[in-house]
Length: 330
Image (cartoon, rainbow, N blue to C red; front, top):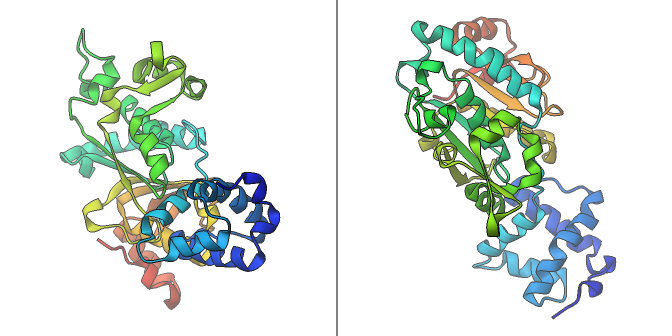
């Protein structure tokens, strides 16, 4: 075994770091700047120790050798940052609950597709350890019309009970690059300290407090968990057709890790996955700055897919180089 002390700053030379930069960018799109060298050393050092390898060059050869795909996934798990919170950027959830969902409910008799029998579909495209998709689920359940909540005495708390009624229907896809983060998200278990991030009423309604061996933990109720499907997905890839289109897409605080060209291609694919009049939520530092005419900004870092008529009007006034980005992939 090699000790961490032996993996000093000289253990990762500039040339080796450049190889890892290219590998990480090719595999995930993440751009590791020169300032990330200490981070790479810190994140991968324990893995070298676990494998009994004496140099980063040895580890690079293992990851890139035939059959090294599994170790590549493990390496990306080590590198990925999984910082997240329940109801992060709360103003966006307030917009969803106070304006977007009520407007959809009002239009139920005027063509709102999910109100005509199709489930409301949401995608948490970089779900990390699950706080975001479960926050989305709580927001959607709490915003159901009272007649659809499935209230029943002696059952789960009223809004949680609505999750098992299937009406009007909520489907949430949660994806991430990190297998480790997805595993925790699927378990739906967090330290009880995270309870402070959830409004008290929702905490009582949707979370279970651990006892005995599970003391100090909390877990999402089954009624909440069954709304969410988890999958490993690389944002560099085109979304499979089986994913379908989404009314809501959240891809927040992840684009900051990509260069401009990669960001643009990812955003283009996300927009192509929006259902008509669907909404795209980005992190507050990740605005589109008017670069994509298929969507319009409705709030800071929140964008709505323009209806076909508006798209056609914009197409006639846009320059030719924007023509391809005005077409929606159905």
